[in-house]
Amino acid sequence: MSESIQEEESLSSSREGPVTLDLVIPIYNEEEALAHLFRRLGEVFSKEACKSAGIGAIRYVFVDDGSTDRSAFILRDSIRDGLPGTLYRLSRNFGHQSAIAAGLHHSKARLVAVMDADLQDPPELLPEMVSKWREGFEVVYAQRRQRKEGLFKRASYWTFYRIAAFLSEFKIPLDSGDFCLMDRRVVDAMEELPENLRYPRVLRAWVGFRQTGIPYDRPARQAGRTKYTFSKLYRLATDGIVSSGIRLLRAAQLFSFCFAVLTVIMLIVFGVLLLRSSDDRELVFFF
Image 1 (cartoon, rainbow, N blue to C red):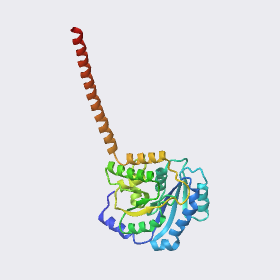
Image 2: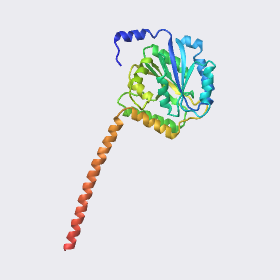
Image 3: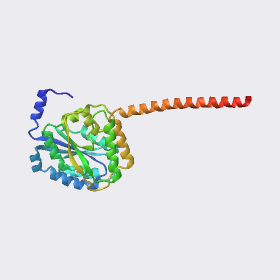
Image 4: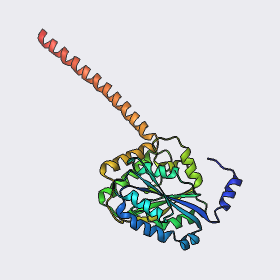
């Protein structure tokens, strides 16, 4: 993942012209939100807007994560009608992170962005991310200042990001989810990693490169209901913490060692007390 100074200068100079952009969007039962999504994408990536942002070509990489509603059929028909996108359908529901990983695997453009279909990730931030990339950053992530969700969910996310950052052996930006833009080199570096547990936001931080955040207020869902139940959120948080490093394993080992030592000490104490109790009974019987 190293590069020479000449290669870096060449890559920096190549950021001045039009670039291609693949936008990875995982889909799971989002038929109610798709019309809103298409409208907003059409506004952000109109010909005039793309020309202004220096985007030569845009492609939407939709990954249907085993939807049971009409999401896949709506996407298929929209692409046939001219929507500049590609649809990949997973054989079942593998989960949000797996769908993103599949989309990254099939991306080809110089720039690759990731966003959710429910529009809690505002696509209007993407041109600003492209501008940050032109300044020399390889990863530009959106960093949440506020989120319009319930108190329990906000507190859970706040706690998760700080636990993950504390346990990680490398820097994980706080309050930054999957919504981001990455240079092709970053995606290629992530693809080379051998992890079976693919957690893109953690892998994105691990590979390094120059990264920066754009603060934003996360809005409410545009339409439909959240697909994240408590059990799914728990699994997502567990996967994120486990994939962020081995400090959790070391903490578990330390806890197990301390518990074993405490158990031995307690056994010795109980043994001594039992022997003393036995000696007292024998002394009383003798007298």
